[in-house]
Image (cartoon, rainbow, N blue to C red; front, top):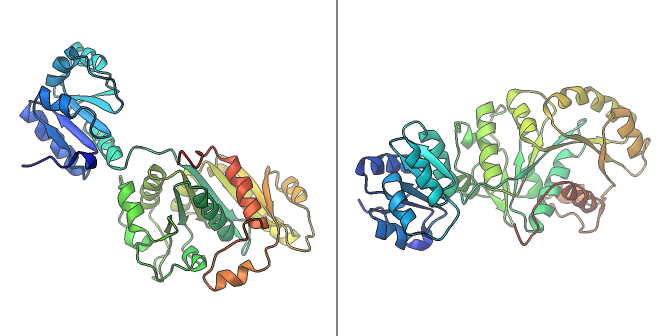
Length: 360
C-alpha cells in the first residue's frame, strides 16, 4: 500500500521498522481519517523529520535516532508495543512529548492523530448567550459578537442552540445556502472531526454558522451537543452559542462548556421579574454568569438597577439600534460599525482572552 503523499499535505509522519507496530499505527490512523507518510528506516525518518505536525516514532527507531542528535522539534511522540525504562530514556533523548504503549494507550494516541488532522488543538473561547425573557435580543447579540469577532480576524463559529427560536440563519440571510444543519448531525457522538464540521457548514464571509432547518426536529441528544461543541472549540478561536431558556441535558451541556454566559435582559420590570427566575438555575450550570442590559429608548430601569436586582455583574449594555430589526427581517444583518450593538460586541470581546488578529 502506498502510504505517502506530497510533503506539503502531510499532517502525520510515522516511522518504524516493526511491521506489527506499523499495522497498529495504520489502523489507528485510519480510524482518525489520517493518511500518514510512512518511513521504514532511520534514513527515511531523518529525511522527513520536519514533515507534518506530528511525528510518531517507533521505539525501534528512537534509540538510533537519538544517536544522530536530531534537531529538536515539537509534535514528536514515541509508540511501542513494549514497556521498560529504555522507552522513556529514548523518548527523552529525541525530545518526544509523550510515550504511547499499545494497546493500552490506543485511545489517547487516536486522539493525538485526530488533533493533527485538525491542525492542532485550538483553545477556543466559548460564549453562551441566553435571553432573560422572550424577545430579549439574545440572538441578535450572539450574532453581533460572532460577526464582529470574525471581522477582527478571529476564526469564529456561531451556533444556534435553540430549535424553537427564530433561527440565526434567517437573521443572517443564509437559509438557502448549501451546508449542514443540526438535523444532519443528530447521530454525531464521540469525537467529531473539527475540520470536517467547519467545512460542512454554511458561512458568511468566513463565519461558520450551525443553525436549524425547517424540519420537525426540536430536541438534541446531549452527546450530539457535546461532540459538536467539542469539534467547534478545537477548530476555532471563538465559539458563540445562542441557547434557549428551557432546561434540557443538551442545553445544559452548552452552558457547562461555555467559559462565559451572558443573560440578556431588557430594562423593564416585567423582563427583570422573568429573568430573576432563571438566575438560580443558570448559576448551577454556568461557570461565569454576567448580565447584558438592553436599554430601549425609554427605560423604566437603569442597567445598574437591573444588575443589582439580579445580583449579577454587568458585562455591558446595549442601546436601541433603530434600523436593525427591519434589516434582519430582510435577511441583512449589518449593525452599524460604531452603533450601540457594535460597541456592546466590542466590550464583550474585550472580556475574553482572545488572540490578536495577527495570531488568529
